[in-house]
Length: 176
Image (cartoon, rainbow, N blue to C red; front, side, top):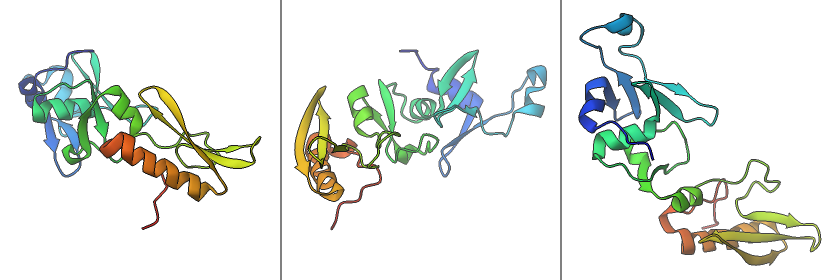
């Protein structure tokens, strides 16, 4: 894992806006290469193909959410998770320290999901919906269901039980 700049170094270069989660370039005293004319006061970095903001400091690229976490907490956890799943929402209230498994638990449904519901697939052989969840690298089958809603509810229950606060249901909202 790449070591992030220290919080004091980040604070010297960037200003954090808590309302938006943006990092803004501060003016530089030496105005090297016309930095202030081009960058000072602008949101730092660019959005990558996955929607995450990347910021270059000293020739190294860093994810903005990791820099925000480091700047405000002083910590460098294995991963920083976006609670709401929005990759450019870097408000500190939307970020939390996570490990790799927790980060994966908070993902939405696969982009090629035909049901649009995380953990739910249609079984052509059984002609029913199946719900599955991964727990500690093991895929658990939760059963076969007549409707996508029943399968989604089974997944939601299992996700809450196994993944806790990192459980993500994607676009599915359980019935009250």
